[in-house]
Image 1 (cartoon, rainbow, N blue to C red):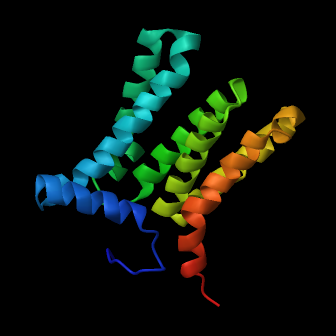
Image 2 (tube, rainbow, N blue to C red; image 1 turned 45 degrees about the vertical axis):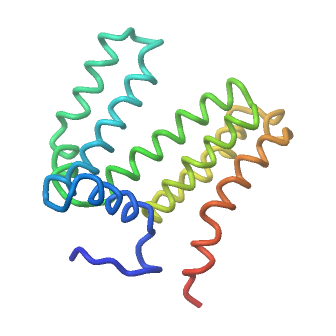
Length: 171
């Protein structure tokens, strides 16, 4: 099953895995480290999300609980893109919350980068690109949709992921 096909699989996971292999060497443990770090990053993002509402102890327990779930453990013991997609989608969600709180161009750009990384890891992460607009509509935050920074969010995504998507589209 594992293979690399340009245009079929998005490139970001393979670039990160190749970089890890260059730094750490080639082997099963090095390849699994990428997925394990993505799972740990997702747990850390959960802690960040919950810390203000629940306190550090409860938030840390939630992060450890996430890592102890059988499904999470199954996926970070396989060389698959799913953990990294989950990490980037969660990171985009966190960055979106920060952007909604402080709608600056920098926060919009960071959210756009996370969205692009999710899509460039695996195309199933494309749903995250609809979340900013849907969130603004559902929360009735139309004022944010009128700001230039909202365009920057989508322009950042389009500039990073657009060329790859257009270059690999099947006609």
